[in-house]
Length: 227
Image 1 (tube, rainbow, N blue to C red):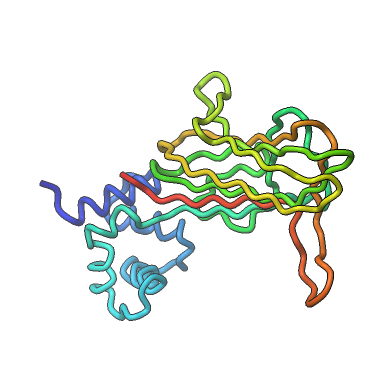
Image 2 (spheres, rainbow, N blue to C red):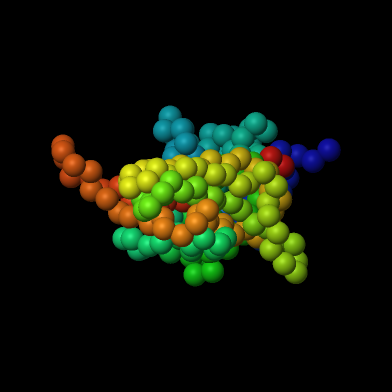
């Protein structure tokens, strides 16, 4: 049976892709977590304090991460990305949207040039797509989905497609939510399209009250490891 330290190191290597000695794997993980450089135990303490401010010693920090209930969940994934466009049209055929303004990408898993997400670990992922949409001439339906690269072509990800209706001449915030399990290194991209042409996505300032801005489009992804 493996020791707790071996289980911790195995998890670190799954996250970082490294194969160093114990301290080297920790340093690689703490680099990903944006902990300032320093002695390894000082860095482990700093990371533990981000999750539990009551931890005050390096030994307590190491014990915190050695808890079997925490090993699996050492690094959840979070992406918050927007479109730089203030306004753009949604095409009438499935088209991969590139979310080119990353606010956060904790494991650098999303490519904001190609629009491809490489799944950082096997787990459960929640995808939230938000569009501030307006249609002309008639009611329209917007669709958002995920596609998986199978090694040769892109194919629809099971149960990922979501529709929403936009009323004629109304500016509406549409939100799509999908929960899926994916294995590590799966490549995803996210097509969006409208039932017919005539839907635009716009940045908007609501009337009345303080000055706020409704983004034209936003993508949020959260992931939790399952193995």
